[in-house]
Length: 316
Image 1 (cartoon, helix red, strand yellow):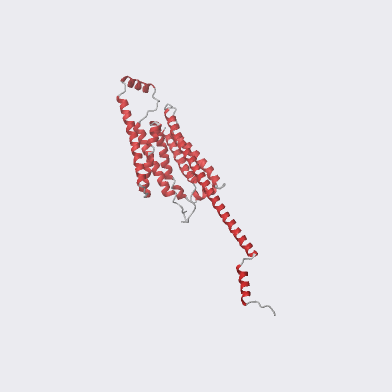
Image 2: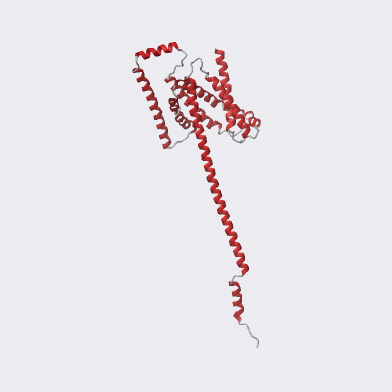
């Protein structure tokens, strides 16, 4: 008698085949799991690399900004100290003319800015001049206003350095921060926070305290001066008339006007020049580079300073 397979045997066999994993299925799943794990590890590695790269980038940017800040502090301090020394350590007959110095400085600025613009544009300096000066004469002429204001500021600063000590000049010249803030509120409708206004207020208070202290010290020194020393001082001034005379009022007035000129030039530059992104036909154009703006400013400064020298020479 032939053996008969139970009816449910085939079902049990098929069920057993589908429920128990085959070696090939295990291999596919293992490969898929390994691939997923490798992709996950790769993503983590890329994320970690990106994080490390961003941290290095932020660190390099912070270091670069610190270097720029240090150079700016050194430049500002050296200009004041050297300027004061050159205006107070020589006789009036040997003192250089301020307009000569400004003309030389602006000419050097023009040359250096042209070199840097040539480097930045990969040798396309003439093309940049054509696009930003020849093809846009109105935008170029707008730089005449800040050029004139900066020229007035530089002239007044050397007048102030001839009449004020270096520390007093450095403190009083910080008034330009306050004047710039006030003018930016008027011309740009800029809003400052309460903390910023408090800082500006205490800045003004600090400058006022320094000025009051300087004035009271000068008055007390004149009141307590020995009559004999006063006579000797007058005789020395008669014997050496070439010694540069100093006036506190003239120095402070020059600083005050220079601060206003600096604030007006800076705010005007931001309001008109940085926002002029359209050419004469009304089409959008790329923003003008920093070095090209310096070329435009220095060009007008050189022209104005040269005309001033010709006028002074003609008057003499």
